[in-house]
Amino acid sequence: MGLQIPALNKQDAAGMVEVTEAVFGQSFNETLVHQLVVRYMAGARAGTKAQKTRSDVSGGGAKPWKQKGTGRARAGTTRSPVWRTGGVAFAARPRNYEQKLNKKMFRVGIRSILSELLRQDRLVVSSDILPETVKTKELNVKLKAIDAKRILIVVDSVDVNLALASRNIPYVEVIEAANLSPVLLVAADKVIATPAALKQLEECLA
Image 1 (cartoon, rainbow, N blue to C red):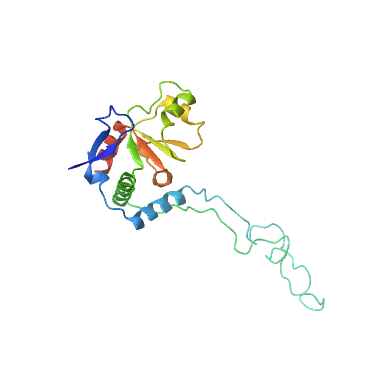
Image 2: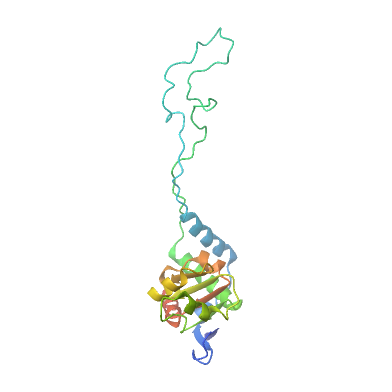
């Protein structure tokens, strides 16, 4: 049994495109979707921040002053974190923020997001979204009827005209179905997919 996705173009099967319920009819798993989004955002972190500990700061080999008799606090090295020129007590070190998520959980999470987008009428299909030229004006005309602050266009493969025409529109993102990002899906007010992209998603997520 299939589900119907509304189309922007009336020539797309009388305004509706049928998709499989196994991919676009799954219940929403909020916990898994949250884990999936956090995993993607964590993986995007560079993790290159670095600070010097007391062992990395140069100098400090000699004791600044003798232990007793000066009236000052005891000091063994100028590299101590309490000194202005010393190291950092809990210094940041380069690290990897990536989180593990197996393929089965990823597929279930993406299916859950797509199904919820369809239920909320935020997912549509269009066979006419690809512009014939690189002009941003042409793409803007196609998107004029869509009332959304953030639009995500999902294609099956990179289209040069679409990539060049959309790069000057701040509220439009373009992504391939094979590299679908849960962060972009969740953030989008409207997701526009080509029929070929929907078919590719069904094959990958079934």
